[in-house]
Length: 515
Ligand SMILES: [Fe+2]
Image 1 (tube, helix red, strand yellow):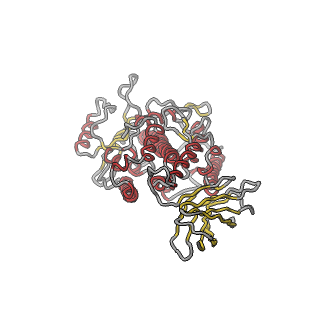
Image 2: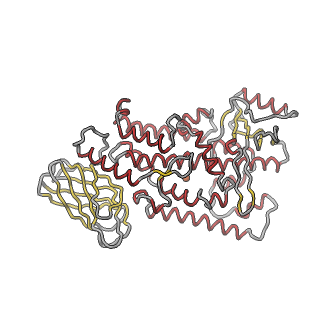
Image 3: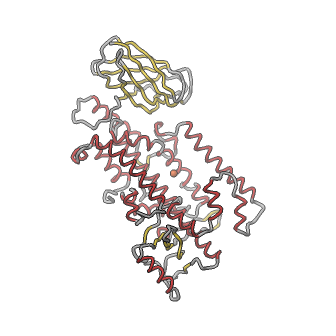
């Protein structure tokens, strides 16, 4: 009995109409009370209400919500409900929501403290988590986008996604404006250069305007230098391919007359300063045809040396691996005519772009994250501590990936229109990359150790990645150890076990033997 203070945090409104009346039930261990609230249609704000309840509710277990609905679709995104009381009791009880409240349904929010599944079927929270998972398994279904690739959410386009996985208005506008601005800049540059043909490298300056960063200016000044070329393997957009050589790569065939090069590579190998970037994954991938024009793909190998002061410099580039028709492919050296050497480096950068975007960005980042997102929605109830840890990080994963599948890597999408791996080569490449995917390759300490990149002062990406990993690991372990103090607790958590199986066996298509 007494007065309750109820805080309502609103994330968004779909339509700010006048029908913002909400029914709210406080459900305690000894009884429940129904209240009426009238919300102001404001975003990102918390409103407080005071209400008297004439009976003793006992400790609060749930808050239930129903929004009065009108003819227009005026859904309300509720972030969280906070309840203080009864009376002078200052301790707040939190009921996280972070979902749309719409339609006639009553949404049931359990008190937010994380807890593992119990074995008491009569427990109110146990019943709630089973009901919640049943509903989520109906909403979040698996689909196969392409055989041999991670499974995805079943949604043809973003409108098919469950409403709670959609971009909010701000995110959607931000994303769509960025796309439009990029497209506009490209079109303007095309118009600007329509009447001129390029005959010198300096002609690239004609399109070097618009959105620029300090880094872009720096790269513009020194993109032809070997020093920047080597630096990019350590600290550029794709620092994932470089590895310290353990032996001379078998694909590197040194023809007679290159004995001095062979001796130099052997010396660097012995002193541990020989590195390689091998793009064999691209070998044999069919290239795109764009507006009737055949495109080309290389599958290069770059050998690099680490200087004592930390500079990484290219020593030799082989554009294609040996083949029956060409058992000793040509080698390009820094001593070659400047444009020939530059062109070899440009082919390497082109290959690096394909592998970066498809293997490391699309597959290891987006598609793996989607598997974890779908498995999390299907297997972990909102009360599960691992759900609470992950949910902020997978918030927009499903929509961004669904947009990518319908606009970027789809048939006739941006890859088909503009990228040399488009037109099917990209799917081919993704399948090869998927076959190599291991759990350890996704963990920076293991990945960097396997590539021999630990303890190199000029490997700035490696240092930053390890520091961030350490910070994240400390936080995650701190939370996880609160619940799983022994291995048998992990084994005995049916929800967690189902989640792991769903990720490895279903989402990643029988990857349980990949660590
Ligand atoms: Fe991305």
